[in-house]
Image (tube, rainbow, N blue to C red; front, side, top):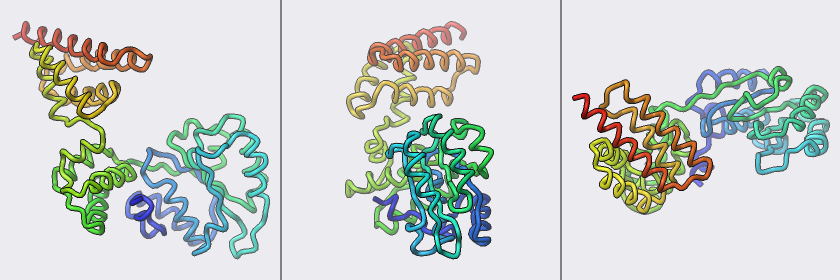
Length: 319
């Protein structure tokens, strides 16, 4: 996979999250580190930064001195008491006296496992340092947060993403158009991993990577088609709007919740009176809740278009 092929190896290879990288470089320079908590959205380099720090600390054979547990591994209280504790208590004979245990997606750990972990972190600090990686730091219990140095990762900027995208496309000899680049950046929303996977999926077709191909491989409707459907509904053309909805569902194979999310994004950009936008957002939110509770997708989406048509009638009556 291109995500692994182009993953930075050392901290010097990471060109974004500059403030965080500089703090981690100081740990590597001092040959020491505290327990750390890496929190932030997916695909922003949290696990990569942890592995790069380990490489800069331990050198080429860094994998011998780290253990990485992911959400795919069982991480209940028994694992913390046995596997984690066994790794943490054993001493290394290297120049740096500690090993590193990376707990990826730590916010999925049970409360009991986190309670068991807090004491393990305290007892074996001399022989093992912990890096907890999570999307939501609020799901980590306070006693563990207080034992860790926090690092807040932010979504990557479009400039950083675009430069990396063009670099990878050049290395892989993939032709990407400007509208294709723009579409990928809109879809990934600051997530480097999603950007690279989308680029690889689009380039695998062996064609020029343009806007149309990007939306097709990503399983997302084109924003212009969603906007056209909304305009039909607001103009009172309910049948035309419903036909557009059905064609998108069939062509892109989207779920109802995916369509609702795109409608929510496009509503904010419609040329409508500002007082009406909260009303539309409320309508979309209600339909999203009903779908999450298992309601029929086509019925609810048709109802959404019908209510948009009624809002369109309000707009006409005000003119």
